[in-house]
Every structure is written in C-alpha cells, then in structure tokens.
Length: 116
Length: 112
Image (tube, rainbow over all chains, first blue to last red; front, top):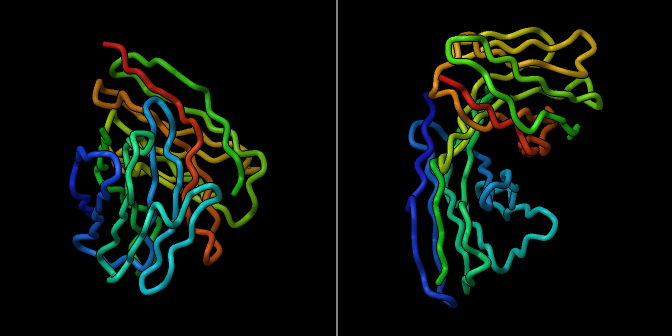
C-alpha cells in the first residue's frame, strides 16, 4: 500500500532556531500534501495544504512566515518551523493523497518537536 | 465541510463487534465519509470510506444510512490492538476542497 515517510520522528531544538521536517511519498506521487499539528490529548489541526510547484494554502490563524512549506517535487514536501519557541512544541503530521486519484489519504508517522 | 458528531468514548469487549456511530446531518450529496484511527503517538491510519453504499474491507464495515445523515463503523471482532481514537470525517469531492478536517473522535477501549 501507499507509504508516507516523515523525518525526523523526533527532534529537540533550542529556542530561536529553525527546524525542518520532511514528508516523502515513497511509492506514489502526490500533487497535494497536508500538514497537521496535534497537541497532547487533542485532535489533529490542519495547518496548511501543500501544493507541488505553487504556494501553500494556510488555514486561518496559522502564520505562514513562521511555518514555511515547500513542495518542490511530487514526492517531497517540507515544513520548516522558523525561530521556534517552546509553544511550538507539538506533534507534527503530514498526509498525502495519490495524484492518480483513489480515495485514501496516507499519513506519516509524525514528528515530535520539543523546543527548549 | 459538514461537521461530524461522535461519542467521546466507548468500551467494547475483546472478540465482540465494535460499533462506532457518527452523525453528519449536514452532509451534502457529493461529500464522502471517511474513517481513520490513531493509536497513541502515531499518524492516523486509514480504515474505510464511502459515499452512499455500504462498504466492507479487511479491516471494517461502513454502514451509511439511506438519508446519509449518519453512519456506523463496525469492527467485527475487536482485539486489544483496536484500542485507539477513531475519527469520522466528511470530505468534499470538489477540486480544491480535498482536505480532511478532524473532529474530536471517539476513544475506543477494548476490554480483555
């Protein structure tokens, strides 16, 4: 079945630094990928929709200058958390849907970000 | 996208069928019903989806009412590994409206 690889699975960084998270579709092409954030004991919150070759579409309240998204190829999207602060500590998850159509969306295994 | 309503939690005995309800009374004609589950600290796992007809796969069955205002996910023989948060999601079919918006889900606990 479709596989989405997310890297790293966890990262600890200092306040003020930037962290990049990668999301790769391993056996399919994805024109569109999605980035979510999840705080403890809460549901997934959609942050943005990443479109290959064009600008990402951000959900209301999500700072586009803080959460930089790049979708340079049909198999890779990256999320960079810039100037990270402790309140950015969260579980970040990406999702992709096969460009050929079909119904299911495949999720990565998530990245646990801790900002100290 | 239509909003979904799910009970916050449910218990089910191991080996029995787990029936998880979902209300989506404002669903429109071209919106799909998706079910995902999330085991602690992992990415959501796809279970099943449907539009109008009931659907079955190796994991579960999805029963959608005739008026499409509600659905039930059935795990036929629940095991301890089925303990997870289950999300019912309604997704638009139009181009540019393909995002999955998660609600609060149902925390299913399988009891030995």
